[in-house]
Image (cartoon, rainbow, N blue to C red):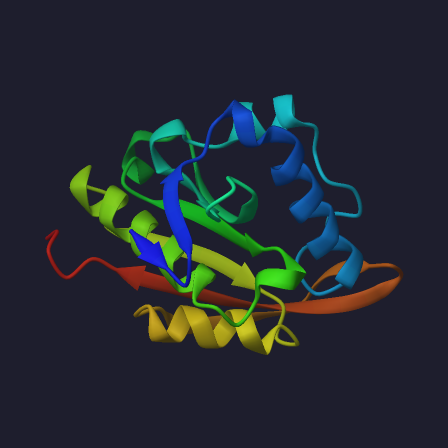
Length: 167
């Protein structure tokens, strides 16, 4: 898959340093996550499902963004449900990178029988809410004052995309 000189490929250990750096850049901007420090590559790698993580790279192989999914629960009833994160390097935004990454994730999850994709997004992150809406996600609710972030209570908008092909 190619978008504006970017190619979407499986995310691997070769991308480790850039994944962590892009994650930290999103954290530093303040509207991506409650986390205050990016995980180590080892923590990231252990938590994310290997078959459902992708990288967008430019012609030189530089990482422009990533998407990855985690199980929402170890309980068998939730085996087909994942939560995801998508991060794009600040200098690569506005080029369709997040849309391409979400498409790759949707394709991979549907191919393996995962029926809903979920995410929690700060309401101030209008760009993320918009790209998710364009990818077929819908708002299912808002968790008000769900957590403190730098001493301030924050809301989280819950979005999901239900597969139209998996019953």
